[in-house]
Length: 289
Length: 322
Image (cartoon, rainbow over all chains, first blue to last red; front, side):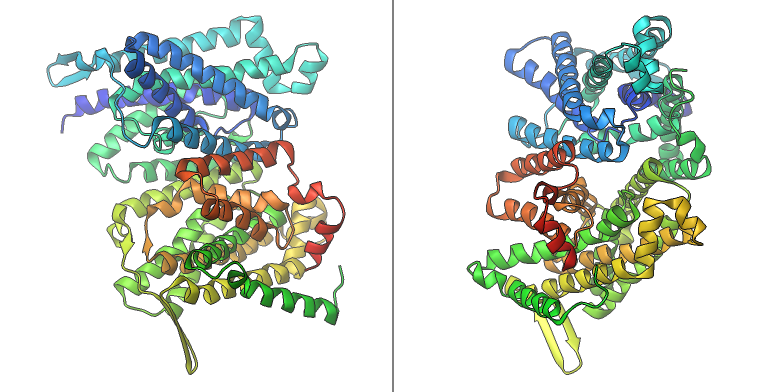
């Protein structure tokens, strides 16, 4: 077995997990929302990019931009729908409402884009780098670079700007923030739009690796759930580390033990973690660190 | 609530049960009608398993697809691989679900609300991944060739290969489920569950062990969904990983929430509306998915107490007294 290649694969997959997770992490940290529709936003964004490219012949870059805009719009719609539940912090109902939202997106995407598998083509997918026993594509490099940039950017915004401070305040105590005179629904809408836009960026960068299907929402992002929860609820830095570790674990476990049972192993670890460290699940404390 | 139901109420219940039995005939008696109502009966039985957890214990379990699938898989394995009859398959389904519920119940014992839902979700993902890869469970192909349902009770034997012959079984299971849920809500355990849900501190002051109650309620709930899986396996003659599909989870949740929580007939009505739409007014697979999602989001966002709450007086009371 080529250990170096597995490590590289792990790093790439890990960054992909982290990038897919980042919007959800912020959403969970700031609005306490477990978004089970996350995978469907990923799927719809990938299809929007594919559709733009195949209908208009637009270049990949433009498709990425349009998909990000579409993701942000979906996030904003979600926020409008769930405003009441978010403000009342009815967490469990909010969570199952996102399951329904995911079904809506999946149904609508199926009606719009059809049941066939499609391919989102990125010109960078064909460019490969070989370093002795190790190789990767330019698309992989782009995904890793973009992940690092997005995480750094989010870190700076949350910790160095007034807006970031407002987001952190909303995460702590929404009613108090409202009393202070900050329009919390505007903060929420930015958080939700960021969730949509970030997962759309992730989709356009990562979906070219595999064919896309309107039913892929669940399996493409199921690992993200683990990243978000393991990273410490809502911790931005934590989810980067969790994503990276999970990517390495996935690559090594599937190479050494069994590719088929990787998901089961990861989720079993997650269960063990949640049961043994239940305090970690109490959202709050480490947000934005 | 009246502890001694009047004869009038018993008579009404029996009349309604009989009326329900002949409902497919009133609706035209076609094979499609029987099939739809049979599906409504088994899916609402599945939803009742979740209903107990959601309405009485106040937690949202996302693992009930796994109990449903466990029942179906146990039945498929016992009847296809080991050539056993439907009774043995039924016992197997219940035992397998109890075993899984015991493990899951112990694991989730100390988790509440949010964490409980996340752990049960993770558990369902583990089960699905195992079912998709373990050859004993049929792997990604599932298990095909489940024989038609045949049950022998003393000298009588019933077999069901067509939807109309299948209906009495499905209806029987539904009635049994309704009876169990009704009894559960009046039992000491059911009352304790509600107390643990509504006021955990009061419960512990009254000497009710919250963790024990939670575990027991889990053990009551799982076999209900598993029995629905048992029936569904025979109905479809095939089990596969699609039993873990989010569709079933969303169907169960919506079925329970749509009419209103803690209404005995609520999950039945909710499931009937959803399955009925899919069967008689289908908009295609994707359209139906959209409708299902929209109903769930709509109820939660605009009418979180369920449709019954829109009708403030009569139906809520009437349904609860049934």
